[in-house]
Image (cartoon, rainbow, N blue to C red; front, side):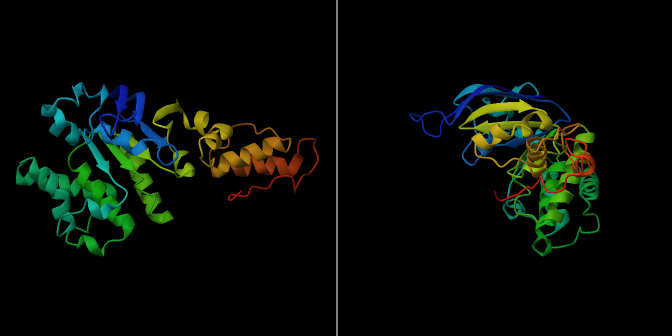
Length: 291
């Protein structure tokens, strides 16, 4: 696992700590949504997980290897891959297959193994058949999938995404998120930094950061249903959570946390049929996303 122990980090030697005593364990196969307002330290924390940044104090262990020791950096970065917000910054190959082959090639693997890994990675992300395409001809979502395929060809144990879906259209985001769920099923841990609260609902675990500190850590239902906490740190609760709260405020107690559209439809049907007093209700619930 990745084990972060009392991590502190300062960008300047004499400056106050930007990250303050952050401790967190990440197990194989976990899907974690890392959320928080701008400037909360999410990206800084993420870069410590694959030794792009090194702790000022504390320690980061990746499968028992400490990031403080330079001799571990190459292996840590092989095991912990990272996808950034702009895929163009990560794509360097002249063709799709050349770009995916770059990482395994740097490992000096046999040609047959490189071809196998390229084929497997492209099939996993749904880009098989794109091998000879020029990367600049791909859509934004396809480029992000190509960046992800390049990581998968390295056989990582952990994948970090730094707002990797924020610039994609809904279709592109959905494709990436489906891949993440498949990776989780195969035992690869995923840490997804996102400002999209609906996207965070799909994670099994949510970690909330604010002001360089870990504020809350728990299941998606435990964290994202805390509407007041999210608003306090400057986040807009997921629409489904806001809907659940509005139903509660209007006098109806949902039978379960509303975490999916299907849950919402079921609870609203009950509300419209019966209301809190056994009478039909139609105009008590209004959710304004921009409020």
